[in-house]
Image (cartoon, rainbow, N blue to C red; front, top):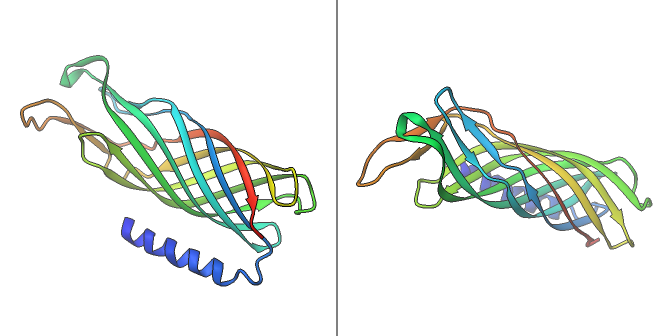
Length: 208
């Protein structure tokens, strides 16, 4: 699945730039912000990712008036903890560091044209997230995202981006983390829909 989405991303980038002659603007937005944690649980206990900082980049091309096609990447590093009495974790215990890398293809709609200094927007995307616990097996999940915010332009070429986001990994087979030592096969496999939210700020560079 991940390979197919990467190929689609490459086709997407080629397509939008092959139409750059008729696109009205190209925007590049690096950002940094705060990502809230998430919890996956069942009747017996839970796995929890801690709050953390996050950084990302977004490339957008205007395909219609005030409508932007986008490709986005976001990463946040967190810490995974567990409380699961059946495996001996009666209290919450930190078990590993963890990274989450999100990749999305999507679109955003501006509600004011580019002659305005303040431009609110709303958008969404579809892609995947790579969940990478240190010393454990990585997991890749289909994901979708929603976002909303505002760009405050200081000039025709540069501005401030402020936004909030919600990202949802689709939990097909649950989330598994093996625990123990000496090759023990015990672990936790949890099935749940998890919503990861956060907010960020960055600079908007209009390249065209």
